[in-house]
Length: 69
Image (cartoon, rainbow, N blue to C red):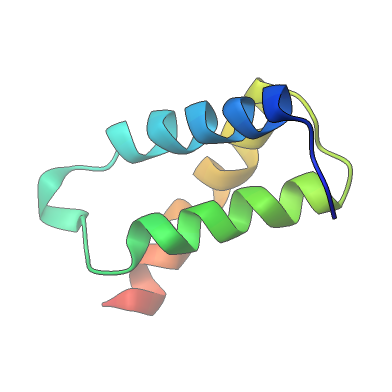
């Protein structure tokens, strides 16, 4: 799937926002990649807004952390 450079920037901003909400003691190896994958999956399913991408990733955050620890 191909995205515009503007949308790629929106996805990057969403990733950084979600990662900034992760407490240091929960930041595990592979977390950023897994959150990025979650954001890409949401985009592939039609989510195009910054807020929607952040919400999609944030809703999965604790599950992702649990899977990686």
